Amino acid sequence: MSRAAIIGGGVIGGGWAARFLLNGRDVAVFDPDPEAARKIGEVLDNARASLPALYDRPLPREGTLTFADSVAEAVTGADWVQESVSERLELKHRVYAEITDALPGDRFIASSTSGFKASDLASGGAPVVVVHPFNPVYLLPLAEISGDAALCDRAAEVVISIGMHPLVLRKEIDAFIGNRFQEAVWREALWMLKDGIATTTEIDDAIRMSFGLRWAQMGLFETYRIAGGEAGMQSYIEQFGPTLSWPWTKLTDVPELDAALIETISSQSDAQAGHRTIRELERLRDDNLVAILRGLRRTGSGAGGVLLGHEKTLAEGGELDGLPITLRQAVPVTWTDYNGHMNEAAYLELGTWATDGMMKLVGADAAYVAAGKSFFTVDTRIRYRDEVHRGTVLTVTTQVLEGAGKKMKLFHRVSKPDGTLAATLETLLLHTDLTTRRACAPEPQVAQALEALAAAHARRPAEGAGGAVGQRN
Image (tube, rainbow, N blue to C red; front, top):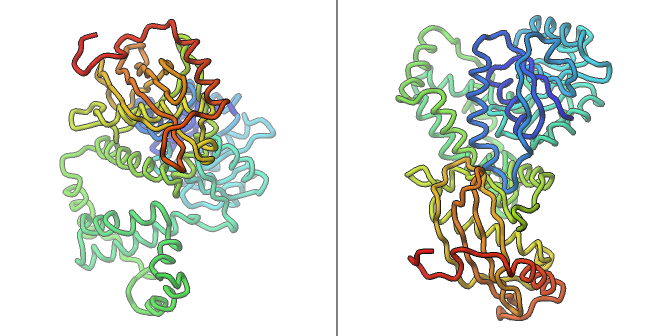
């Protein structure tokens, strides 16, 4: 798939555009709103500052964004059509009629609808499948898919290719799975507001300070399984099952959204936001999500597993100026400090992953480590040459200064996109037997690969290597 058409460029449509663009697809957008280009541009700014920072490999070269003057122009030549217009069934049917006039026979329409069933959407004869995302589309991986089985399979392949997690519904239901949960929580929250039990801030605190954090990694049933202790889920149900019959909630009853309740919600929400604009709140949300998702990525839990799976499909390696590229990575917000630039600890972490890249290059990969051998760092010297800010894509090349016997001495150069040298890291490692925790000679294939690289890099200058702290060079 190389080209996506986005019909409707609001919050969701703009998020889809960013998700496809940053995964290397060209995107054509149609939206009659004269402000569409500005709004999507702002969504793209947020996406560029956050999505690449989730990965330890670079995303593909960004696709080309164009704005079409009609539905037909946007759809012509598209491999994927994502409809994200307002939630009015008659409007969607009118749009589908325009799309199908220009749609090749083997294509279908993916709808971002939040609640309509695919059978309702396709009742006019258009080939429609539900592909429902969550905001922000460019960061949250879930896409709920429903409709014709063959179309669902094709849709799932595409969303996987852009780093998302397809959840194909077993049965067609209104509002799908995620929104059914959100609706239940929303109703209960409205009752608490109406009855004066809690404010919008207190309700949000109850979520974000407790079960919201648990759900991000384990969901509902695994969380409750742990709550049951060693006896597991059966014990939990025996202890807490009877509470289901207690009048704790009002999920089957809906409060009237009268003027008074709407004013309560609006005024408290405005006060809760304080002086922050919507764009500032979006950036805060994205920064928090990047930090949470990178944490989950380390363990492969929840959405972190989706990131790791997608990362394996992204290109790595290559050469720059005749040296191997051992790492290319966007600077995540978690690597920056109160000054807004990359901090000292992050440079060390960057060097760590670059060293891992070199280890893989010479054959000391995960399988080698699992077999009981590795390299341990014994000394590192970092020189900071230029300021680096969040979102900057850094490229690390590695020169082997020494690769004989037990020693591996490396010189990492960290470059910014314009070629400016941001830092250098000189690091010395010793090959180690993990069972005895003592230095030893590497296996022959690793030793030969290291020696070959050291010989190839021997005549290269390494300005800054071998100096002392504070020495001018």
